[in-house]
Every structure is written in structure tokens, then in C-alpha cells.
Length: 281
Image (cartoon, rainbow, N blue to C red; front, side, top):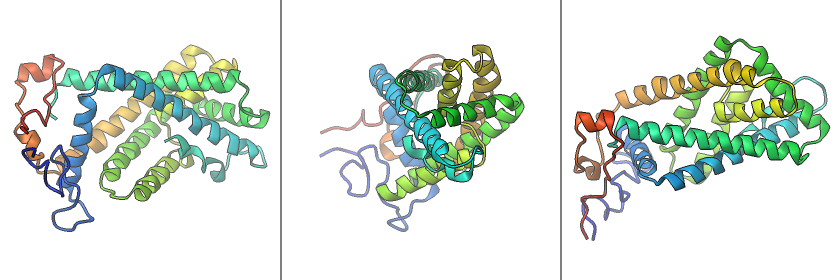
């Protein structure tokens, strides 16, 4: 038998709750926090190979968002992009030191972008889209590039907040169908309201570049960087920190018993602690 809460029916191996303490099918803020923390711990302790391959795979899968989005928009009568054209947009969708977290964020982001670029190149050179869908795909990127960097940044802040909030609520859901519906409707809000997420935006920008519609400097400095900055502020600053501030820092027992990092380790070294390290058979 494992120690801590691993053997309890209402707790996962990490110690995160699998059902609510007060109401079985509803989690409190602290319980959601524990579940998010357990998922984050798993990712932070994953190998570079796994993080890279998962990131590239996820970025490539995001291409399906771009393809479905463009295909539906191209198939819809009329030249204007309407709310109906966005219905297929969502289809593709610890205890650790700061350098360790930045390593995971940077690696996963880079892998996501590489996957999105590769997927968009495949779609372009493979002539996957019909001419009407190609025109719609170009319209998405052209509309974005026409906006000011400040407007893109502001819209991306809201998109980052939506995605981060979606992750928080996804951990509050118990059923797969509920999780799917949450992801779908949260992601649908982004195109319907004219917001931008950097991974999908990379597909839009790459599509523009491969069709010779825009320049590298324009899509990078006037489109993607403002979107990336806004996503980070909205996701990390406005949601993650605010949600964390609502908790009582009720870490799972396994994590409470893990060794703490010194301030020097936390700020300067790439190091994590494994929540299950202290468990014994």
C-alpha cells in the first residue's frame, strides 16, 4: 500500500481530490487548486523529450482548428465572416523553481509554434483547402495584421484569461462530456469576439507568409509578439495569480511532505521536487 492519500478512493496518487469533500460532485476552490497543481507537477517533471513531442503534436493538432475554421468560413455564402463561420474554431483544441517553470513554458511554447508552422505548411503545400477556404484563411490573418499592436495585445489579454479560466474550470469538471463542452464553448468565444491566441495566430501568420501576403517582420513584430505578450499577461497575471490568491494554499498531503526548495534553488536552478518521492511501498 502507498502512503499519504494514494490509497484513498477519493484521492488520486498525487493526493489531489477526485471528489469534493462537502459535495461529492462539486469541488471547492482549494480542491480545484490541488487538481491543477497535480497536473502542473506532472508536466514539470516530464522529460524534455516528452514535453517536446507533446508540444509539437499539440501545435500540429491546432492546425485542424485553422483548417476547420477556414473551411467553414469558405463554405458559408457571402464574403463577410459571420458568427456561424467560427463554429468549427475549437475543433483542435509544485514545488518547482522559476527556471524550471520557464523551461517548461518556453519548451512547450516553442514546440507548439513549431507544430503549428509545420501543420500550416503541410496544409498549404498539400493543397488541402479549396480556393474559397484559402481566401477565408487569408482573411483571418489580414484582419489581424490590419489591427494595431495595442489592439492585438488587449484582445490577447482577454484570450489568455479565457484559456487560463478554461483550464481552471476544466479541472472542476468530473465528466468527459462536461470537459468537452467547457473547452468547446470557451474556445468558441475567442474567434466570435475577435480575440487572439498565439498558437492559432501562428497558423494564421504562417498562412499569410506562405502565400506571400505579408512579411516576416510584420507578422512577428506587429502581430505575434503583441498577441504572445497579451496571452501571458491575461493567463498568468489576471487569472492564475488571482485564482491562486483565492485559495488557502491547501496543498495535497504528498506535496506538503515533499522537500522545500531554498530561495537560491527556487530562483536560480532548474530543479523540482517530486510529490510522490516520499511514498513508501
